[in-house]
Length: 202
Image (cartoon, rainbow, N blue to C red):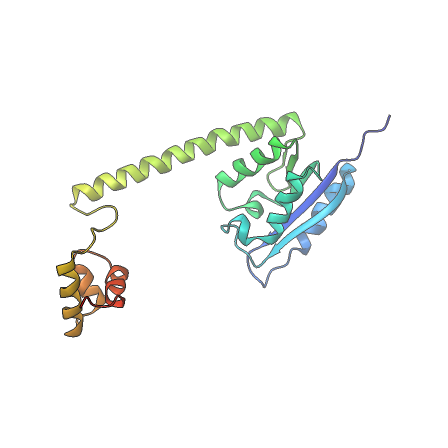
């Protein structure tokens, strides 16, 4: 009995309006034909950064919807940076695919999770992603510790007292800038702006 053709969704993205998804679509169509895959849907996002979330990428959002409904057996993309701009994207998205029994093909990385080698590579990438997250957390902790050692105030600035609020209005009336007021009262310029926008107490 002949093997059932795999239903494939192709996804392509470019970051700027001056670029085109045509080359990505053409090459992925050739790959699909060579493997005997049936391209059942094509999703594109043009002029949209990969740093944007799903809600800002209509093509990617539609792709995720098709995956959730199990309308495809595999997702094919030119490279991981077409799906997103970080290693976390490479791990999170295939994880969502795996939960639905959908495979992933990435042309540039040579990743095909329908093969044993592709699954092994995916598992290795998961290990590296965990390492990257741990490194980021360590850098954040080190940065906070250094800031505290230098006497910097961390977290949200304290709320201004009613007396400080009155003084802010008086100082502003004398012509002081928002930045100067924020520095004087140990807060932020947006906080000063909100105080000034509020009606002065009677």
